[in-house]
Length: 213
Picture 1: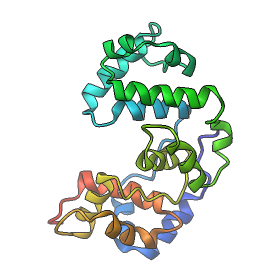
Picture 2: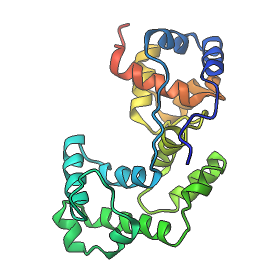
Picture 3: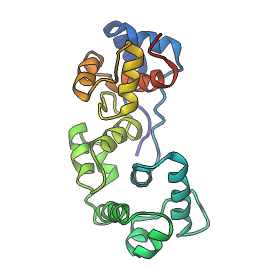
Picture 4: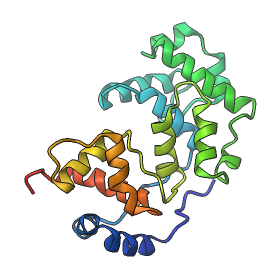
């Protein structure tokens, strides 16, 4: 699967600067848009499941133990077949809950039987990608949207369920509170068809801009 962006960053910047001066200022103050699309969509989804509702350090430790169940390479994601052959005891020993073990097996089964074909999914429209991914237990809309934005490099994704995006809006627009998803969708509407880029700069704003600015 190609991991290069399929749209012009220059065109995105030109549109966003005209459509929303707040985003335009963030573009000037921060490094260029760099979502770093991945090379292994299957591994990305495995990681997303492992990291759900966990702090980064705890999730990394569990991921490491999980990978080491299948060999000496702590960076190698096990294949769907390996996951399907794993017992509950093995997965619990790595720190994986019963619920997440079920999610991992469902993802592995979808991959093993061809229901989730990552070569084909890259050619689908955004809504169809979300539909295919959310058919896997444990993969919700937010995970599917982040997959579209980061893994597939799609240009027009606005993950309003992401607290980082909404906190960035609060900081960038000087709001009293983090906006609810419906309001966040309104704020991001002028960014279309480059809402992915606008969202990325909201993450930057969340980590660098204070409300008092």
